[in-house]
Image (cartoon, rainbow, N blue to C red; front, side, top):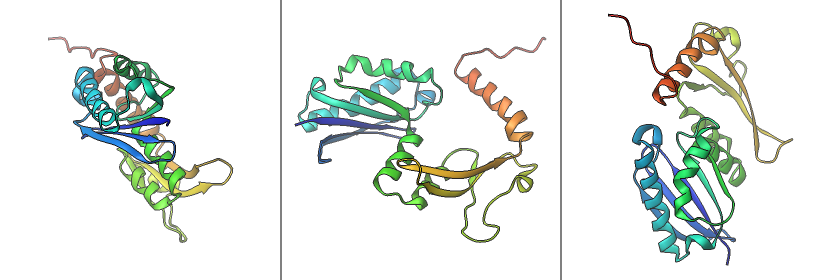
Length: 206
């Protein structure tokens, strides 16, 4: 029997599930939130270890017997985050290839692969901070660049299945390029860098 591990590590909870090659669930466990940006790396690693250990114990599958594992992790937003978060998993001794992605990407890909239901894809997109979904199958049921002038949000419309790519989506995306595309984006990126302690904010002179 080949067993695989899937983990959804979010800002409110962490789920881990072990399944066989037929998709039959062998073990499942939950723990607290594992978004490292909220909890810190040590707490995130502890939550992941707790959920993964519980799922493997329920499935009676040792870590070294896994065929593969996949992780959808909140807070994995930049390429340098991948090895950093992967280091939290190294001590667990998980065998087989391992893939780490942002939890939103995992949700969208899993949705398209399993169901192809676009309504659920739109619901997932609506959960993204700063994103507005306006997608009506009627004349004027989408946002144009001129309509979003002066707004800070990014607008997504015309979410459709992409027949040229396996499990793919295509969509129409617009924003105010001066606000969100330049000024606001620059501020948000700077805030992110400060929060991650990649740069230090300058103190005002007394």
